[in-house]
Amino acid sequence: MEEKVILAQGEIISTNMVTNYLCEQGISAVLLPALEYMRTDKNSEPDLTYIREKLALQLEANPGYEIYITQGYICRNAYGEIDNLQRGGSDYTASLIGAAVNASEIQIWTDIDGMHDNDPRIVEKTSPVRQLHFEEAAELAYFGAKILHPTCVQPAKYANIPVRLLNTMEPSAPGTLISNETEKGKIKAVAAKDNITAIKIKSSRMLLTHGFLRKVFEIFESYQTAIDMVCTSEVGVSMSIDNTKHLNEIVDDLKKYGTVTVDQNMCIVCVVGDLEWENVGFESKALQAMKEVPVRMISYGGSNYNISFLIREEDKKRALQSLSDVLFNNK
Image (cartoon, rainbow, N blue to C red; front, side, top):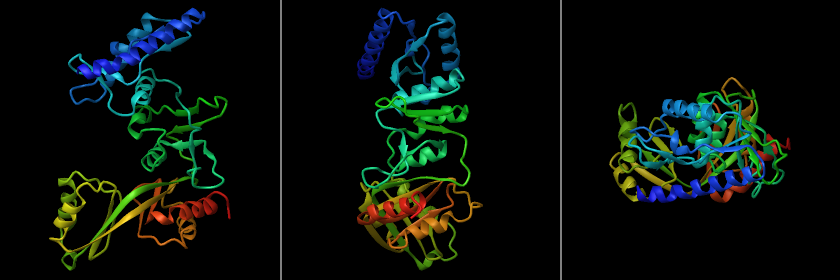
């Protein structure tokens, strides 16, 4: 706990300095200490009822200010000790506060111009994505868009409050608006995740055998290894993972149930948008774009906002460029 107390001092000192500076400049500003209202419960999850009630009291005691300043990230735990919010840092604080006060919009400022429809370092002719559903943003965050941690906007999502990502280097830019609104039938972006390993287990014993998948998944669970993609057939199952710490042990255990093959240096390329199955045509466009790229696995149906392709890392650049050309540039 001593470490967390020390880490909190940076937030406390900097916010006091900014508040004092604004007041010296004649701006009506007040500091609302986060430790007075931001608290987690015994499960280390934000205590939303407590936050709402205590923040309301702070605002009632300090009415009429132009600017309200507080600290991000820091809080007290259920025992009154200084702690932190674990996930998402100050973005999480912003989302919790916005939900607590029922804000019309939550703004998160960063030095990156929102999310792009592709990685501009790899693909030519990218453009910023101006509107996303919360689920679309979560998919992109997992696949490398490091602007927003998926869990940090959950309070805003559940409170139905839009979150706008804005660029501190270009404050006049409209940024990216994330909300519960879906742009029907529109594909928003393409992203990629590197360092993926594919594992296939083939077994004639799988045919009509109940419990086979449970036994396979329990092996990954025992080594605390998450599975990204899954594809099954009558005699086999293929999975992808990004954590290879226990790969050898996992493979040895899987060999009890069948023949195991491993492909490393793979990459997941993900198409994100409104991809509900009623929206006919988007699958054929994505597949057409991938016609020259060897595809190891395809995942569709687990989400209404994602279709994923497992390919070799060496094919990533041409896959992303081809998808961009077909889906966004109409080539």
